[in-house]
Length: 385
Image (cartoon, rainbow, N blue to C red; front, side, top):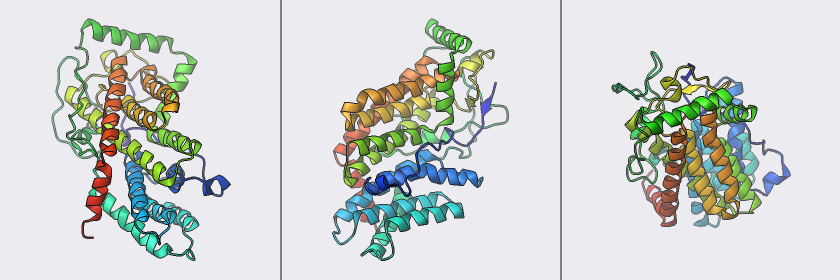
């Protein structure tokens, strides 16, 4: 069976159109413009065979820095909000992208937003850079490939690692979330007992799907396997923000809550994965054939990471854009089902993953509504450099 030993939870996608030179780019919120530049920089790094940073780290840091930049610019009317947001965005991305050519590309985009003759541009740049340093220093971190020397439990129904390859993402389960009180706060109930009628029915469904997989199901499985959900959903959010003509302040808030909630959902998901250590369908039945170009992630099955992130993205965007909720739910459900179509997850992985992601997201929305993110930004801003 094909195992994925890549260093990313999800492969990368370069789907967002390049906003440079577009007349529409001048009217979109600055936070959205820089959000939409991320896939461009990822593409440039990949073209140079430089490893891009993991997007589940990029987007939360970027969007929280933008949120903080908007807040700081409001407190200093002599500075342009656009310049401060652009400077903070460029500083975050320059820290995360290490390739010199990509960094030069980031600098050109910054110059486009805060030309050297713009009044207050130097002060705005200094403020944006200071915000970025504070965010990077203080933000929760997750490391997908941190060394792990633990013991993988064994027994019926227990997941096992690819030969000679350590489990991926174990330390994510021990990470500090943005809004979570503890990483196990929303741990789902156990999956069906291995060998039970419920488990066997779920396994049989995967068998049937892999035997009778349609061309459309294969396409869905491949599309979500080849796409990074963080990029897809940030592009979806950016489109909704522009469609509803949000201000820069509101746009930055939506993106910050969206990406922080998604990161907390991923942390919660991996905590559950490495609490239950549930075997993958194709490990239970080695005759299962995965969809073309779909690889088996080297971590336990329950719950599905794709479904966890999908549920979080769906809940946050549904909260801010209730009139578009049906669209977001359709995308989320397709993202989750893509893993069943691919043969890498049971339906209960998807169902509980969606549920977990939505619960985490609702908690994040409530925390932000009560000022948790603003208080966190104020706290790090009050620290001495």
